[in-house]
Image (cartoon, rainbow, N blue to C red; front, side, top):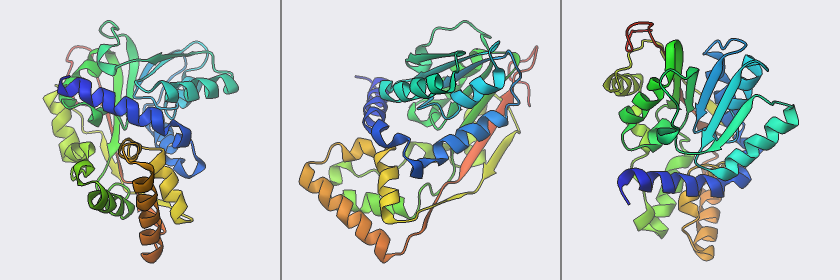
Length: 280
């Protein structure tokens, strides 16, 4: 299995497992950031939108509401359990203008210029070659259309993140990860350079600092269970899992952690009518 296939399989497994906690009320930020991404696109009624790494619909559902019944949204994600959640929510809202696909964003097969807008929220960093992935998404944007990529800023989920990996290192050093995939683009300059490598040039890149409150340490554990951390937790046996959980909650209580950092970077690029890399 090559690096790309391994990354895809790892992400699909982690988020299929995380689906049972993904929409937990304490993780409301997923949908908040998805909605904010859509708002930055100024979508119009009747437009066609592709939402990749769509999760449980945090950006796809508000996009469908914005483009209306004459518009169309395609929501694609590798995790079938998250797609099932998104489909159920779309049905509950009576949204009939969304097509759901359990599929890889690099192999969707749409022709060039198929969409008025392409969206990727918290997903581009799962691909080892992010520039290649961005180039593929850009290919599907029509002239005059927009590409929106939202990623995490620095210090994601700190201080709880460091506590998590400290305990994993103590229990299972083979699973310890000192580097997060989004670290490569956690500053506006890094995201700008990655997009430029893909032939996409924009100055519409906004870093937005943020924090997410924790009413209790259990709130953080629910967030961890409904996110990419789940991929690591799934590899622990029951006794190790229990020790990590208890150690985690104990540390957060001792340190009186009442919030975690949720810094975000939004990028929107507009494709020129004649120049595929025209600056926004």
